[in-house]
Length: 189
Image (tube, rainbow, N blue to C red):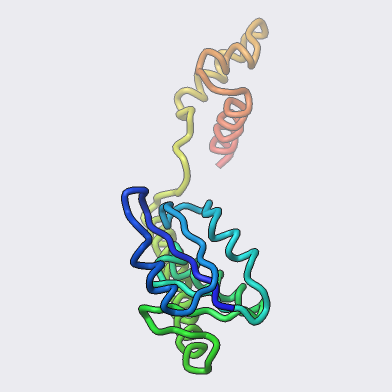
C-alpha cells in the first residue's frame, strides 16, 4: 500500500499540488499538514509513520517535505527501512524499494555522515585555535576577580554571612563559592 505525506510550511499555502502528485503515484491514504519543516512536532507525520506497516511504501512529493535536514531525512528513512517500509520521492525519483533507489539513499546517508564529521572536525579545530590564542570557551563569570577579592574581604567580618555577600553581588551562594574557590586557586599558582 502506498501511503502519502504532504506538508506545506504555512496555512496560506496549499497542499493540492502535492496531493495530486501523490494520488497519481497511487497513494491510497494521504496525510497532510501545514507546519514549518523546522518544527520537531509534526503530528500528521507521526500519525503517518505509526500507520505504515511492513510492505507499505511512504511516498512524498519532494524530499524536503519529509525531513528538516539531511540528518533528519536519513533518520526517518533508516527507521522506515528497519521496519521494512519502502520510500519514494516523486520529484527526485528516489525509490528504496529497488536497488537503484537504495543506492541513492545510501549515498545521501554517507554524505550526511561526512557532513557531520566535517562539522565536528571544524568545531574541534576552532576550539583548539581559540585556546592557543588564550581564549577560553564558555560563559563569562558572573563575578570578576575584583568582586571575588571584595567578597573575601567582606567575609573576613564574622558578622557578615555568605548569603548577605551573595545578595550584595546579586549572585547565588554557589556562584559566590565558585568565585572564592577560583580566587584561592589563582593565588596558589
